[in-house]
Amino acid sequence: MRKSIGIMLFAVAAVVMLAACNHGDTYADQKNRERSAINKFIKENGINVISESDFEEQNNVTYLDKNQFVLFKTTGVYMQIVRQGCGEKIKKGETCRVLCRYSEVNLLTDSLQSINNIQYWAAVVDKMDVTNTSGTFTASFVAGESVMASDYGSTAVPAGWLTPLSYINVGRVTSEDDELARVRLIVPHTQGQQYASSSVYPCYYEITYERGR
Image (cartoon, rainbow, N blue to C red; front, side, top):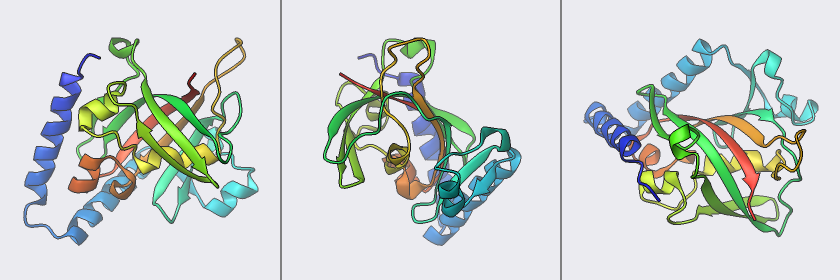
């Protein structure tokens, strides 16, 4: 697989910049800066944050016309379901391969860090093996078949990426009426990839999910 050198340089540069900014800061300072970046993004994009109870009352739907994102308080992840997707949910006890196309923006530096949903990566889709154990999802990227794993040197899937799997269908397009599940996520460092976790910054993602063969 071709290496995403340009995006890797963005990621490395962002981490260096953050390391410089974080020098001498306490973890509390870093978390406060992360929270400010998330709040700024929410305000600038006119996002309407709803509670989990409101989300449940809406049958686990986020209304796009109201630009709703549901906040999961336990994890701090914000999610907007753009498309529910075709097919069916990953069943309890099932392990399946999931194909993802995504973009990742560092909200502290407002910079694109990693992406595979552009023409350059048309032939490459991130592959991850997902297991649903009694409603709890775990996953790992397939080594050598993931831009995310290549960029960050790890097959660990950001925990935030798994949040939507309880609410979306993961299927394949078999007719012109079918659409892949698509979500938007605001992911704090505690639920993010390893660079975000170590440097304490939040990321914004747009991701599609497709069932692999």
